[in-house]
Image (cartoon, rainbow, N blue to C red):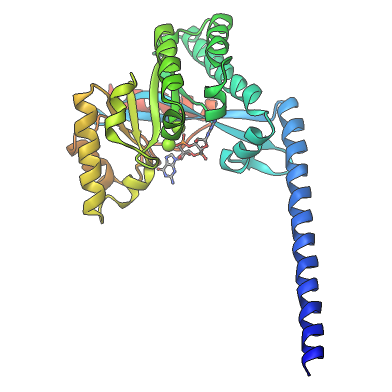
Length: 289
Ligand code: C2E
Ligand code: MG
Ligand code: MG
């Protein structure tokens, strides 16, 4: 009867509610656990940088390196940034970790220089929260001074969304960084609210076309059209274009033919820890001789 049906619906409703609550509590506690583990891991020196080469499309020689954050956790293994950058941002840890990333990259650049390696610029990813902080530019200046790294060998990678959020602030900050001698690139280009037109407001040096365009380039005439337009506009604005996530020779060939100047991706090299990267660079430079 109706009463019984309602009673049973209430029961299952309540059961479901309790189930969701339990799942949510579990989620929250996992998250808290991750937060604590991250704090401990950072304190204990478990954060490391891997470096991925960026090549010039014509000669296929390494022209720069991108520093990519990893958490080498003894219990969790090598954790990719996608799994914890959000937590660092939410907990306010990103500021201190971001400074650590920049400092480590600067120290590495100096070490390579001291070892007599041919200079390679290193790019560092910066999260919107870091970039929008008033203390960002002074921090960069301080780290450069303290490490002695030449500003010309450091590149800051920004994302589009961050430029749109506050155009004036972004413009001022980019100018200040450029005045210090750093290079600026826009990462993941084409995924945000990219109005190609707004690019002219920012004095950026590089534009990195997002991997999603590169992946589909063979099958998507639309992606090809967008990419060709991006490259054309960037050329007119004197911005160097980099294709990210190049995995096949066909993709590399398309971008080279389209006059994209630089390429990065697994086809050439995965992000590597320093020792392995040094072996790769040594082998690559031998190949060029
Ligand atoms: P991103 O800056 O766009 O970095 C490129 C990502 O694509 C890296 O992932 C790299 O390993 C991956 N990748 C490179 N070539 C290929 C390819 O051919 N195929 C495929 N499938 N993937 C490729 P990763 O290292 O997991 O980093 C993910 C994102 O995390 C980065 O994207 C960046 O947004 C962020 N990130 C990494 N390190 C830092 C950091 O120090 N600070 C901040 N704020 N964000 C960081
Ligand atoms: Mg990047
Ligand atoms: Mg990217």
